[in-house]
Amino acid sequence: MPNYWIIVGSPDNFEKTKELGFSIQGMKTRQRRKAERMDAGDQFVWYITGDQAFAGYATITGPSFEDHDLIWSSGKKKDEDYPWRVPIGKEVALPRDGWVPAEGLARKMTYVQKWPAEHWRLAFQGNVHEIPESDFEILRSEIDKAASQAA
Image (cartoon, rainbow, N blue to C red; front, side, top):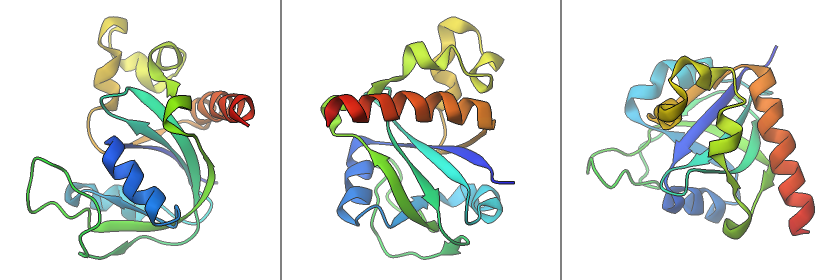
């Protein structure tokens, strides 16, 4: 059974992943255990900080690996090189003006219900979060809807 994830990142880091043809996704140093659990067939949604929006989703195509080539930037920790990486195949990536606002969707997600409604943003702090398949389906459906409207 596949696992489902949210990858939290900045608009700049999403752009870096786009520049790589959505072929690879990096995760921060402290995400080693989660990265090691990721495997081909798992899927994730990109959540973009600042914009508080979902930008698309992808399927992981192979096992995680470690690589220290500098691609992504944390902006805060100069030595953070997002060393835990997975090969990916993009399913849908929205243009920036089509990103799906998170607030209304977040309140529908089982994962987010751990936090008080007014603090839903806390659910998206940190770089990687595992979510139930039902939450992924909510997000996938809304991203697909936005993609069809942008087409």
